[in-house]
Image 1: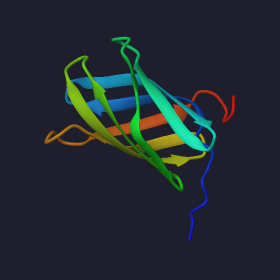
Image 2: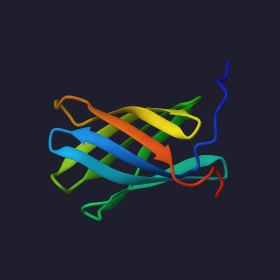
Image 3: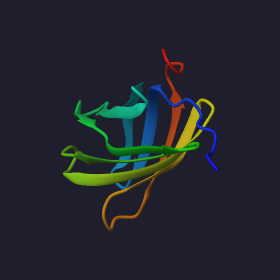
Image 4: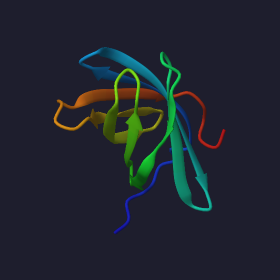
Amino acid sequence: MNEPRPPVEGTWELAILTPLGRQHTVLTLTRRDGRLTGTMRDVRHGEQVDLVELEQHGARLTWAQSITRPMRLNLAFDVTVDGAAMSGQAKAGRLPASRVTGQRATPAGG
């Protein structure tokens, strides 16, 4: 049975609570030809990366990304969308999971 898939497309402002402090990012999700793609930009450091292995299962989104600032890390995200809110975690290797929270900055499709 397929879970209902809420619209996730648009721009999201996320906060990631890391051991180095709160990191602010902008997540942009788009859907083209049925395929979900995305990028994430670190507000403080300006680094923008493409998301890989981005998947949506109902209200749950998972993806991976590699960053170089503030340090080189491979991150795995697992979040849930609830209307205009997003919450979950980001994991970097053996480090403890970091809490992720966010709000939609633009409406779906806009």
